[in-house]
Length: 214
Image (cartoon, rainbow, N blue to C red):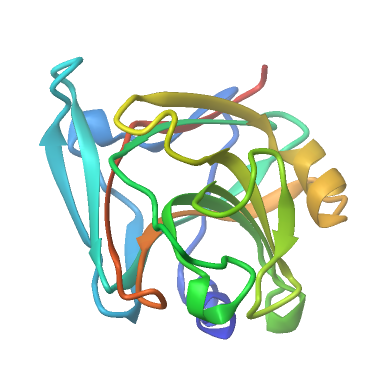
């Protein structure tokens, strides 16, 4: 799966971004410009729906024993805009899985940033912020598929299911502390809801995604 991601990144033409507030996912505007889908094992369904609480449009991801992600390739200067902002709302977790194994490497919600290794695909680094079903909030671990992908439980468990959760993370600092990567730039952002390994189902709503300088 990680080789596929690296290859996919090489095929995209980057969109360079330099503003102090950089929109990535403008889902409230029904906008998926520059987002590309990559299917790993069956297609997760992505569709715009109306947020019942705010009446705004959001992106709904529905996974039923599937794994496909949406990727946005853009070079973000983390010295200028290090903060990744996003929100999501999920309805359930995946009971009984072990996320440290390949058979349990599924997440009801994930957003991740990628540092592209270019032709040296094995140097591609990914930091995943996930809603974990088996880890405690604040825990990190390596993907069972590759040590170059770090997973971090930004949220976990059932307590906040069905409610909107909002986040702001300093990606440059997180890459240093969580993935051991000191870099000024990232090359892509991706979102997923995947349940192909466990054979389960999940539905998650994603709000707008953007980078800010503070």
